[in-house]
Image 1 (tube, rainbow, N blue to C red):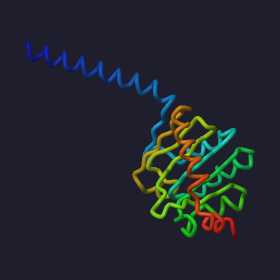
Image 2 (cartoon, helix red, strand yellow):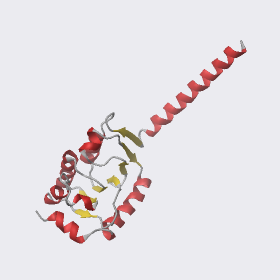
Image 3 (cartoon, one colour):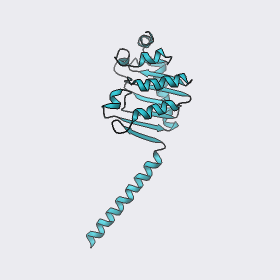
Image 4 (cartoon, rainbow, N blue to C red):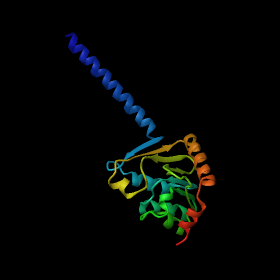
Length: 184
């Protein structure tokens, strides 16, 4: 009898813990969305966020080869959204890089001066939403890799990212490489 009571108590506590976690995740879903490649659709979530931008889009991305995401960035630019893209130096000559495509369509693009790699992967939408995670903006990230993506709707967190983006954009860019992606 004592053993049965112990099992019931343990099950009850487990159920309470599960309910608490479920309630907490439901509250946080409005602030934080979590996506995993090959399971969820991070690409669609990024496109939706970019298509919903009304004021600004600032992107710092290590690898950017996904044409669908590049098209969403161009659509934002064409709607009058202030759009800026900061990329790793590998994107100057990488075969499928979207740097030249974006620049040719009027999107300001700058290339990192970091002699190693600029491994950031984030976007700031309208100064209040962050898109970040291991997810590079590539077709491989969408179709083959195991990647994660967070969309965080928190202006206080966005402020930290905005400050870092401003530093990268204003001080840490390679002028010659930046000019190279603008020349077709």
